[in-house]
Image (cartoon, rainbow, N blue to C red):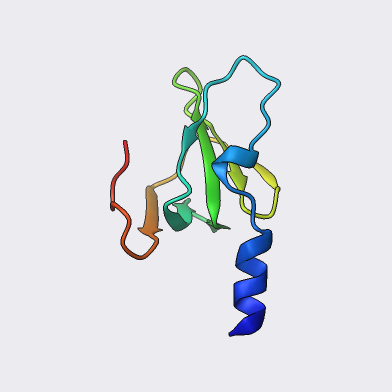
Length: 92
């Protein structure tokens, strides 16, 4: 339990997000995870923090709480996430 608390304290939040691009990002830090389900695989991102949706290509840029940047191309069959405790299920 103590390790989980320490890990949570180290996680990045939206306030820590640094963006040097013209892209606009939304705060999705209320999600515990999000999953992109493709026909042949599933991509799960734990503790997502920031999201940019490219409306022309359909790709998603996601920063997670460990500081890892993800680019998920369009073509998924399903996108799902779980809200953190006591947070809204939908934020946008």
